[in-house]
Every structure is written in C-alpha cells, then in structure tokens.
Image (cartoon, rainbow, N blue to C red; front, top):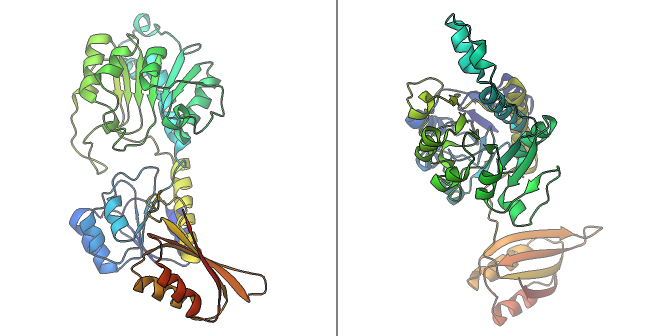
Length: 401
C-alpha cells in the first residue's frame, strides 16, 4: 500500500509504516497545487496530513481510498468531497489530549501570576516584586468547561488536582446521553458555565453547530476579571466580542488558536487581541509535545495497518450515521457460488438499491444467511423470482426497518 505523507510527521511513524509493509513517500512541505500534483503523480492509496488543507480538487486527481489526519480534528479536509468519492477519512482522537490539557493549565497559572509579563520586565532589567506578587490564586476557584471530550476530561482531572471545582457543559451530558466520570457539576446551557465560572476553558470541535457559538451574550455573563482559555479552534469564538470583553470587563484571555491563522510553520500574523494587556497567545501548539506526536504517529500507523490487513478503518469519521435503508432482506441459503449474484441481479432488475450487506456463515460452512438492507420494499414479483430462481436459496423474507 502506497502512503503519501504530506506534512510533518514523526520518524517513528514513518518507520512503523515501512515495517508494516507500506511504500512511504515523505514530502512534508506539500500544499495547494503541489499536493494535488503529488496525489496524481504518486497514485497513493493513503494520504497522511496534519494541518494541510485537502480539497475536493485534490481528491479528484488521484486514487486515494483513505485520508488520515494525524491529529484530533479534521476540519481542514473536505470530508463531503471525500464521501462522494468513497474515500475514508480517519483521525487520531484523544492522542494529544494530555498535551492540550497541559497547555490550558499553563495558561491558567500564567494568567493568574502574570508570568510572561514578569519575565519580560526582568529581561528588560526591571525588578518589580511589588507588582508581580499580586495574584488571586486558583485553589477553590471554579473552572468552567465548554466541551467534555477527551481533552476536557484531562483538564478537569488537573483542575481537581489543584483544588478547583469544575462545572461542565457538553451536548452529550446536557442531553443525558452520557454521565461524567469525575466529580464535576453538569449544566444545560453554555451561558450557565459563563455565569458560574471564575475561569472558562473551551474544548469543543469546530462544526456548523459550534462555529461562533461564544459571543457577546456569553462574555457579558462572565464575571468581571474572569479568565477565558481557548485551545480548541479560533472559529468557535467571536473574537471581536472577546476583544470587547477584555477591554470593557477586564476579561483575561489565554489563546492558542485564532481565526485565519497561517497554515504554515512561520509567517507574518497580526491579530489585535494578542497585543492587549491581559491576553497571552501561543502559536497553535497545544498538541505539540514529543509525547503527543509519538502517540499520534503510533495511532496513524495503527489506522493504516488495520485498513491494509482487514479493510476496516478505525476512527473513521465519514460513514453514514443514518442509513437510507427502509427494509431488510433476509436470505437463508446454501453456501454456494452464484447465490448472492442471483439475489443482487433480481434486486437490480426490480430497481432496488442495496445499502448494506452482511453474509454470515453457519458452522460447517454448508449454509449461510445474508442480511441485505435495501432502500425500498421489493415487489411480490421480485420476491418470487428470488425464491424460485436459485435452488440453493432456502428461505427469503423481508422486514421493515
């Protein structure tokens, strides 16, 4: 299997892919037209990226069947275009959770103690113990989490270890679809987090539902002088509203992500927020520890190895959650060549589309049962043709889904 690695990637991952028998093409600086051309020229089966954008035009150029995002998100990949072409999209969820949680906690402590400002003054030759000995402390404070996935849980663990209380909002918890596994309080609206917390930390993925979800109303409910941490995605937050809250309500912010941030490793980048007093920014490096990158590389190898050896893709993100199938055809049959070909041919003639199929073999491999999900109910004539057209069919029935 040919794997094109078109982004920075750990050597341990490249070694692991080669050990698994992959033909690895490592071109970490590819993007835009160069990436499209490389996909076409290499005819790679698998593409591995981190922050590089993958567009529909790139997918049309080659023979890809799997894209792996070596990280937690996948918003830089045109997933809809991949789905239309039958290309799996997978990622590595949770493997950088501890690294991002560590950065979030670093922001909290840095904001409370104003560590970067103190360092800057000391480097400039100024001793100012009178100013920098002032801090509120985080013990006994309330941390509010927007999102409670892998990263949110790791932040909660660390906050509890610092003696903080934790209040959480997530859609799954608010809807009763899951229960927290730590002693945290669950609220049913993001605004309730803003009202309760001394510190808010954001840990939701970027989607059409979360884009711009935290704006003027949210920040107006935060306590004056509270902290706001974003290590998720810049587009989740209305940064103009945050800038207003920093200026007018004394909100202090720690930001690892920004809207429109550069895709490359180095570039000129100016954002008004980063220059404000009480705001500390980093360069979207939340998951960038050696530990996290080694874990992501190992997970990438696992995903590709599983696909190569079993045909199944761990962590796939673009399979249909709701099938258009309305009926299931159940066919008991002798395990002989041509039986399923006869079934599919009759369904084709009847204008019925197959959505999903599984064929289960009984002990001894003499008989099997096929369960075939269909987008409509076969007509009586089709059912009769199925029963009577092949002597190895033992029984046929259809049930609504």
